[in-house]
Length: 557
Image (cartoon, rainbow, N blue to C red):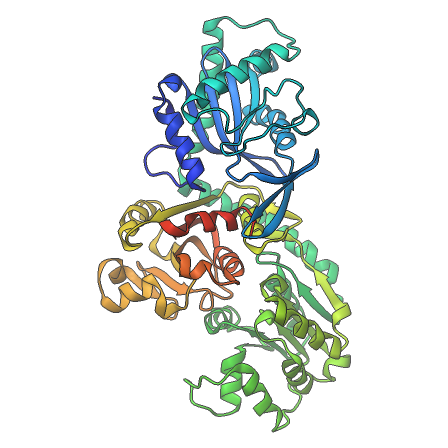
C-alpha cells in the first residue's frame, strides 16, 4: 500500500481520478511509493496542475497526468476533446507536462547537485484510448511517456515503473547514479518539502491570502484606477474580481471630494446597506440598490414585486428631474437597458451626453440573447465605444481564476494578482447533502469563524438546502442566519442573487444536481456562485451528476 497525500476524506475531480487514486493506494506494486494527488505548482504568473506526483524508491520522481476523456483531434500544439457535442481545444498535454519538470525542480529549491541525482519522468495515462501517438505528438521516439487502454489497469503501476526506467536510460544524465542511501535521503527531503505544503494550517494560509489581497491587490487596483480617473464617462467591463466596483467607489469618493453630488446604484439591497454604513459620514454620496430607489420614488409598498424595467418605465412617465452631478451604476449586467439609461439621462445634470457617468458590468454573466440588447442600449447613448476591459483578477488566486474560466467556457482573466495558495474541493453525495454537512462544517469551524463561512445555493433561495434546514429549524439550520439578518456566531446562507456584491472567505456551493446541470446557463451560475468564495470553495455535487460537473470544471461545456 502506497503512502498517500492527502488521505482520509478526499475530494476528486472525476471518477477516473478516484479509481486511479485507489489503484495506487492499494496495489501491491506500489507498496513503497509515496503519492501526492492533485499537487499544485505555483509560479508568480500562473498555476499548473500535476494530477499525481509519485516518489519511487531508488528510481526518482514521476509526474503523472490522467486523461479521462479521449481526444477527437490531435496536433503537436493542441488536443481537441468532445463532450455532449461541444469541441474544446486544450494545450498538447505531452508538451504541458514535460514543461512542468523544470518548474517542479524550481519549487523544490534543492541544491543543484542533489537535483541532478534524482531523475524526474513524465507520463500521461489515457485509460480508455485504444490507439497510439505519433512521435511528433508525444515528443518521444520510444513511446515511453504514455500508457493507453492496451495496458490492463491492474498493471499500470508496473508499467509506470518500466517507463520511468526507460526515460531515465534514454536521457543524457550529467551525473553518475547515486547510491541507494543517497537516493533515499534525497527522496525523503522531497517528500518533506511537498508534505509541508499539505500540512500548512489553512487558517495561516487564509491570513497570508488576506494580507496579500489587502496590500498587493489594493496597490495594483489603485494603479489601475489612476489610469482612468480622468474619464468623464466610462463603462468598466470585466469578470468577477477584476476591480470594477473598486474603481467605481474610488471615482465616487473623488467626485464627492470635489463637491459634486453623487449617486451609486447597485443590484443588491444588502450590498447597498453595507456601503451606506461605510459612507454614512461622507458628504455628497448617496447609495441605493436600484429597486429600493424606484419603489421609494414611486411610493409603492416595500414588498412590491414589479420587474425593475417596469418600475423604470413608470418613473419615466413622471419626468424625474436632474439631481446628481455624477452617477456610478454598478452590477449593471443585471439592469442596464435603454430604459435605465433614459432614466440616468434624466436624473444626471447635463445628461449622459455631457454629464459624469460610470457603469460597471460583468458581461460574461450576461446570457447571449441579452448581450445584444445590453450593447444596443450602450450604443443608443454613444457609450459602447467607452468600454474599458478589466482583465486581471484581484480577488482570487490563479487556481480559482482558472476554475471560473472553465465554468464560463472562456478565458476570463489575463492574470491573477493574488499568488497565495487557495483551496477548491468537490464532494459527491449519493443520498442527502445534509449528511455531508457534519463532515465538512465541523472541521471548517475549527479554522474559520462561523461568519466567514457561507452556504451559497445555485438554485433559488427557497429551493436550497440551507433554506429548507432553516425553515424546519433542524440540524445546521439552527446555526445559520440569512444574509439579510446576520448574527454573530452563525453561518450565512443565500443564493447568487442575494450574494450579489458580497463575498465570503469560505463558500460551500450547494444543490448541484442533475436537474440544475440540465440548465443551459448552469456554467454561468456556477461561475457566479464560485466567484463569491475568496480563499476556499467547496462544491456539494450529486453523485449522478459528478461527471457532468467535472466537464464544467474542465471547460468542456
